Image (cartoon, rainbow, N blue to C red; front, side, top):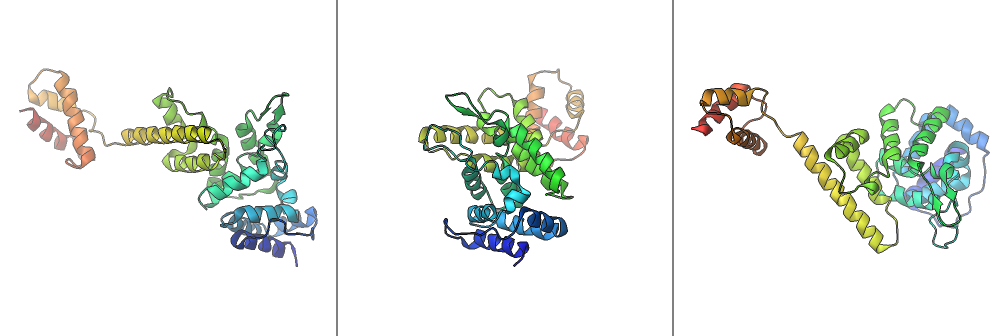
Length: 301
């Protein structure tokens, strides 16, 4: 057996499951795992990607930890093992256990599983205890910076800049849906859409945000779900508005001139009617000015 064979067994566990108390001997040193990454990076990445997309991803990740592979390649993940959010409570959330649950809770796509697995790595560098509670202030920002260093160190995503950027954006923005409030301006919502890479990025972010909600407090969970639903509705409405078909520039000026009427509220009402017809298919979008002018003038008589 070599390190690749052992990684393949971990991948097998992610698809078939394994007992929680399974004994996994340390057959290889950190140097040997680092060596196989350097010499066969493509195959190791493929194995890790497939493991992450398995139905028992938590099992596969735990096996990777027990083999020592994570210690060699991803010490950032080992650092969150046994890292709790409340030292005074037996119910405290272990960040490693939480991260495995979140990884299992998002759709089985490579970008979402990597984003979910790494979303809280910044907590190991930001954990503070003031005698009353534990805080992880700015762990999203620190986590994104740690991903930068991880990528620089081992080249996890290689030349796949799109995947790296997607995972980084998920880590950096994963707290924003939870911070949504009704008083967010429309420009604030648009800024979130831009920062996360448009609607597709927002859909990924909401998948991660919902999986990240692992609280056992029913009231807290219900409030968070309602907040996420409200944000999602606002994003969809603003996106639809921003991407709705618009009349070509100058259309209403030509209609005003040909109508022989004075400017007034009727002109704005007519614009809204014409653009509504474009949205519903009564008028074809993307036509030249004259097409809309003819229709608009006919509606003024």
